[in-house]
Image 1 (tube, rainbow, N blue to C red):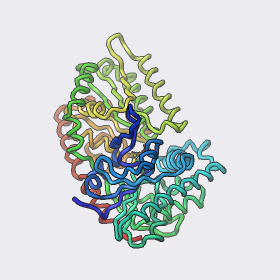
Image 2 (tube, protein in one colour; image 1 turned 90 degrees about the horizontal axis):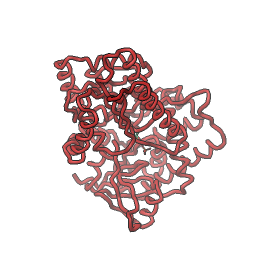
Image 3 (cartoon, rainbow, N blue to C red; image 1 turned 180 degrees about the vertical axis):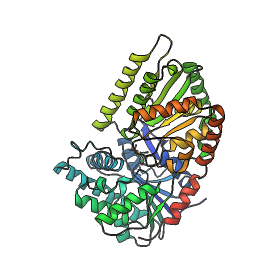
Image 4 (tube, rainbow, N blue to C red; image 1 turned 90 degrees about the vertical axis):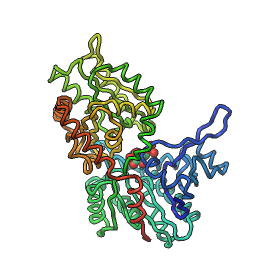
Length: 459
Ligand code: G6P
């Protein structure tokens, strides 16, 4: 559908640029939930997607004036690399992500020192530059959909400069509760919340995150802005296309060779602190220790691919996960069985093959805005997999009743849930899997976009 009056705004754009062997710039469509959800509304529709140039190659593409790639109309915002790094690493990833997901080890972090203040300045600079690009390029009366915690301050600036625009902000993560927002300095918390309130409405995947945002606004701003709830959806055609493709079939054959007749517990995640990957392995080890009948009958296959590798916390977590898997395999392997197969390469068809083959899918985040893997697994799985799902994932609202619920901190409880899933009779597995798949496709990406368009309003 043509959408010339739509402007999508996000930190990471729908395509990233790389150099080919001859040094030329090549566009690559980004992976991940944001592009798969918003892509259909933007690609080939005339909609404009404004995003930050992240890498040197992205900056070179912007310098060359590349304005179209993979069907997207693009506008890249280029800022000084050190300012961008402070915005992305120090504030978006090391501060807001941690506050929103409750990841802080509070006796040690955060440390809001003068360097942090410089980084907050950089965050404001990037938000202002992105807002100015919208001011310059958005058609009269356009609808502007701003995405995520990297760009919370855009709406307030737009409200002042372009009152003709209809705007909405959507947060893909959980939102901090008042105790979490108080880990930011008072003035920054107030600026962030007021910046979000500067959009026509603020959207969230779950009523829980919406309630947190409203509680923060009430406490800090003394008012409650307009909000809406709109869980994102899996693009069924897209994921089934990958699942039926040759690359996925090859990967499934390789996986079948590796696991044979064993039962498979599968997980697919970014190698990310909020995903609670280490406790998932500890729960599996507890299962092996307390229920010996599963030894040599089940294998845990984990496809966890690197993310945000510039942050020391992520480097340490990746090392911790690898060491833990090494220790578990050293302790429990036999001559014919390795309990954990860890794959840290980033190859989507391989991850989809795992979701097809798994007998149990473990999704146990500490906190998660939504978690599309839980929905994708329900769509592509071919073995009536049981979903073991953290109550702290936004998607629990939609599919939780068909899953086995876990408290993500309760390793023994997660082990018990894995046992229950592995032991479940075939009839119950089938009826749960069918109900899960139906719940997972109840909403479509088009619904999610329609919700945002309906919520967008002049600020
Ligand atoms: C996850 C989150 C999104 C976020 C994205 C950023 O997918 O769910 O809310 O926008 O990460 O990832 P990036 O690789 O750009 O840091």
